[in-house]
Amino acid sequence: MLSALLDLRMRNHRTREHVVAPGPEQNPHQLSLRPAAGLPDRRAAASATFQPDRPPMLSYRHAFHAGNHADVLKHAVLIHLLNYLVQKDKPLWYADTHAGAAIHALDSSAAMKNAEFESGIGRLWSRTDLPVPLGEYLAQVRAVNPGGVLRCYPGSARIAAQMLREKDRLRLFELHSTESRGLQEYFCHAGPRVIVQAGDGFDGLKSLLPPPSRRGLVLIDPSYEDKRDYLRVRDTLRDALQRFATGVYAVWYPVVQRRESHQLPAMLKKLPARNWLHAGLTVKAPSADGYGLHGSGMFVLNPPWTLPGMLRKTLPCLAGVLGQDAHAGYQIESDLS
Image (cartoon, rainbow, N blue to C red; front, side, top):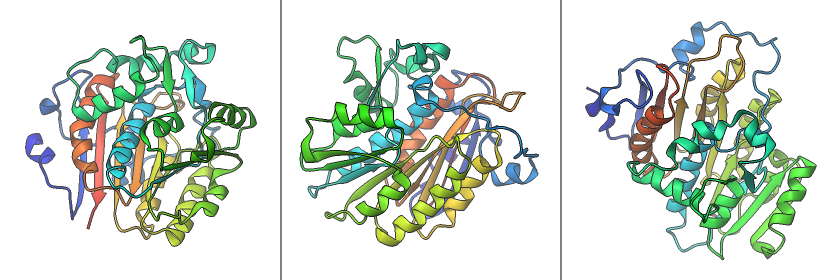
């Protein structure tokens, strides 16, 4: 039954898949079909008891989380989008509203505190049996680890800079003063190809759209530490679509026990985009105390037609390899009409 489900053609129609792995490292063809725990499912969200007055569920300083399961999902999708978009000769403009650091040292005190990379990129690093899209992802991480030992993890900005051509343009926003200075220093010799702006990426994006080439990819991945970020993501995308309706917009969000996290995909589906795709990966059951990141999602507006197939190859593998308990699973849904 599952094989038939995974072989469904997802192009030009609305489709929805929920799969939960019975445990880490299971054969994807033996997965059971039931709602994935912790993923933003409309039925689950409607019946769940949320506690919006509790303190924030996630303290997301990215240095502590570099290379974790959420980074794996985000960057695997980002790399596929970039690979597809650079096939056309016309220049591509890439914008990152919350760029963060260009590269993370995995032996730093921050990265080693919880060593989240060990259950993310660390589980993939030495494998030789991964599907092609994850091999392409690993190639980008290996580019910053030339000795073959996993010491560093690239941020989204570094990955984009590695993959984009000389004629393409990167526009990076970062509000945190220390991070923005670090980005400016890192790309100080890149010239006009890469411009770093210290400021709010939600507001700064308006000045870039539409890009001169009328070809663009925008990554929106705030920390969501401030719950108002969820509404700002929606409002930013609504404005962006008015300015540049044909752009590709990729939104990352955390799957946590917070009402706004579960409501975000439903809000984004209502935006006036031509089509959309929503993918989610959960690696474990929500914690009993209500804190922590147990999954993440990517919502892409105007996705390339190749993205559903890439995710059908990638997500079963990630759920099996990165899964930490029997609640690991994935979700794919789309409207590609």
